[in-house]
Image (cartoon, rainbow, N blue to C red; front, top):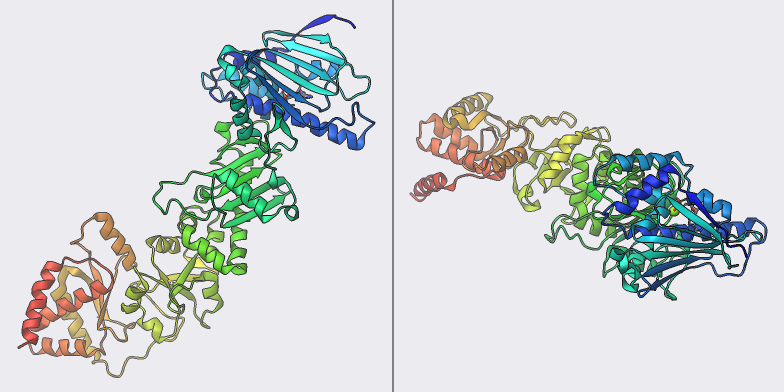
Length: 615
Ligand code: ADP
Ligand code: MG
């Protein structure tokens, strides 16, 4: 056996890289293990492929596995695989030179940066092996190629400038890396530490990993398997593992695609919305993988913020070489991934809404605010999101929900708009004056209980060609359904003019207009907001924190209502009480609109009214 020791220089770029790797105080240096395990898994994967396609390999019956051994006394960590191994030429070519321009760019980029070196993605740039020198001051590699005539070699280096290659004793196929740990990295000779790191980064490596002879990676990379091969139990176990959950998920979407991107994705909606419970803002929970190797845990970039409640994994083989953690947010590929998966997930929700309405309802009750957040702010997905919104309406039972699509599906012939009205509850909306005309004309009105709903409707303006109109809009114009003829009971138009003119005087700056209403049936009067809708006005009241100042309204009166007719009589006869009644009618209408009034003035007035009534 020859004992010739050949000493070779590392290529310039590798020397630069090693210099950075050795000297950086990188907090996440444990990722070196992920890199070495992924190299071992790659080597086994290549062997498996060769076995299927090529000539007979050396030691063909060797089990395909990765062994990791810790030696706390010698301070070594050893990683052994039964993969393809390397010939002498391959050792020189693979671990000493880099051909890839992307890797060179990465090294240049790293060298240019100050103290903040992001080595996490070192593996993505085809130079993952060198991360071993973050923790080791000497690396020894024993390797034997799968080629029958390959030979056994020993590669060794301290990572400074050069390495040696020596012919080794005849060994079985594969590669063994021995890391002689630096003093500050002795921890990696401890089984617990290594086990934790393997579990964190390499749980889904598709070959057995034996740590000191015990198998440690028990969780399959489910997302790369065929759906038909996975049981519900397996899915649930996997969910519990990645979401750190104790219960089962509410919904699950497992999908793969090849175009426009290669993606394997497994997403879960949890049973509970923790934000709802006041746990603070939910952090994103989808991990990004490339070929089953973790790239970024809880990646904030792979889904829009409003999907932060989703737990799961995404795996894409196409992550480019020029990506680093800081540019992940800006990467065109990541945003494409984000868009494709988001669109797919929304489609899934849409189909859930029809195929499993009960489940969708449960989902909706817990997570609707997230979808609304998206519908209000995310123009990319607004259209798809609006389809998912659900509401009660004047034609549903309490608790029964419909979508805008359902509304349009049963819209009255000739009706050109979708009507909605905001209020704190079904009871308040239904006892208010705004629905009267719609009830009369049998038009469905959507009930919105959250101010954000009105905000969304204001932003999208229309749905499937129908304008979205608030039922309390000041210039509501029901042109699409025939106008009501003037009620026979109504007082004359002259009287109406006289009364509205007088009301304007009495109410002064509290009104911008007083007019006869075309929308009232049972109520004497209604107020409308000159700013669009009352909900808008209510919001402004809250924003301005000025509860005494509700701002002016438009007052509409019902000319056929007995009370309004008597008011006109009282005005005509010069009765002082007319003024008091007018003010109270106006404030009653404001209360019905949900506006907040200062009750003190009203109490005095009500006392006067009672005194007169009890006379
Ligand atoms: P990458 O894995 O992205 O190619 P690395 O720096 O991690 O970059 O590894 C460089 C090369 O060294 C690999 O492409 C492979 O050819 C070779 N190599 C590394 N580890 C092994 C191993 N355990 N078995 C066989 N070849 C290996
Ligand atoms: Mg690698």
